[in-house]
Image 1 (cartoon, one colour):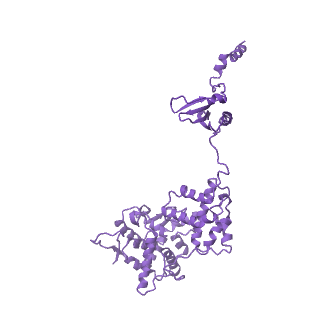
Image 2 (cartoon, rainbow, N blue to C red):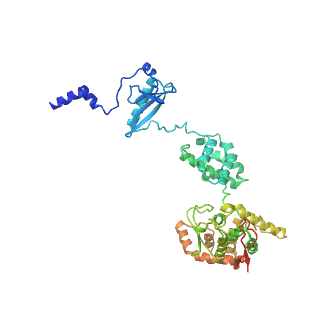
Image 3 (cartoon, rainbow, N blue to C red):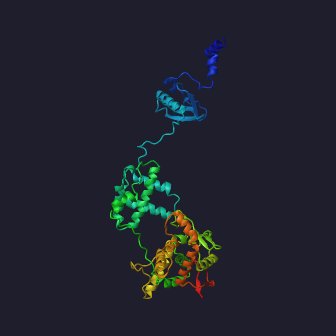
Length: 458
């Protein structure tokens, strides 16, 4: 009897209305003619008219005369409104069919408005890919580096592979970019290869390319260097170790901050960038240690820090500089920024030219006969170790931050051999002829932008 009552209730008008009060209201579908007669009501910017046939399908009319289709539904229990297009371009039947498909997707938890780009839409030629990479990935790099990327790729790569689909670019295409400059501009060619490799890795990560980078050296080597001749790194012209004391004396006589940076570079035998970007926060005067962190600007250290034991001459120089420099960087250039590579290179060139102008040979590399450069001072130190001392070569390699052995071995050696390296670097400064010095009395003349700083020999 109860069952019979429920059955009668469900089939009654009230039962049908109450039982479906949580469902979208189904109206009698309007005909195309009836829909065409729907107008803006005159109130507000737009009017919404239910057209029936599909739950939640509306025609929206605007005061401007525009007409479009709108579907209201729910996705993951949240209301969602989806535009289906202009009513002038999409007929009533087409709008209903599209609305039914979208409702099926919504019921399956799929957002119909999210469409992955097709393979054809993802196609892009290399020239456009480069410009997009410049805009998105190089926006925060320094202007100098950004210009280097843009100029080299636009000059050497885009003219050759710029019109090619990035998916179709092969190792042979990359080789065609590098071959014209491989013999004459080897270092530039290597930089371009690295930049191309980074762009192709980015293209794969962003979906523009399915294959791995065609600019990897392991694939290009058989084409560009089949005989394996490109093994040795370029030799940097160095001051002969027998001439180092004379050169060091001339540098100490200079009064600029760049001379102090070059002096400190020679005493520590580290890389130029490590000194130019050196900050006071890296220096511990109590433990007499300078710690160069990995991946900081100006360093080539990638995974490990490098601890430089500070000898008395080094500390003496730093204390004197600190009296004059209050900024973040120890050897700051204009506007407090790190000193540029050109600044110390220019000073080293000037010292050489002064010697040749006086009728002397200057400071030339013994192997190539070329004028010595700042980076070559590391070779000067290394030659002195080999020719004039009994210090093991391994200790010298650690001092100049050359990687030897595993990370575990390197960590142990850096910690356990600091004092041994301190004695070695003290002997190096003694060989250079560093004597106890004092800061010169400040002149009453106005200070120059070069930050005059000088050690007067006692």
